[in-house]
Image (cartoon, rainbow, N blue to C red; front, side):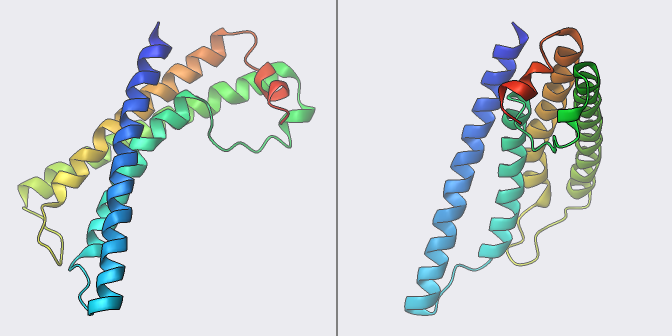
Length: 168
């Protein structure tokens, strides 16, 4: 019941991230062509790319977490008992939930400061808070997804079988 909702929300955010990525690619391509052909790059293209990519990455993270597809080093896990592997999964997802909640909190504070002090990007003078606030939904959803995964691996008996299933 909860997982399908989280999966849909994460997929929706990933689609937004994909659109942002496509826009960043188009911006970069346009700037490179303009630079090579007419010696006229897009002003502030790197600034826009950096801010857009930060938002896109934040949008992709929840889908990665709800599908349990983060990079794992399972060299040690293959020799450990299933109960230990399960405990390691629970702990790792719980730590990710805490770290992403911390990132959410600190990014929200940074957003508030950027808004209050009218922080702007160097070249284009864009308000920094707009890009920072766009990162918040991804960080929040990643925290919720990681918490869900932690509880899921704690409750489900077949969670350690994932390692054998995937051939890791």
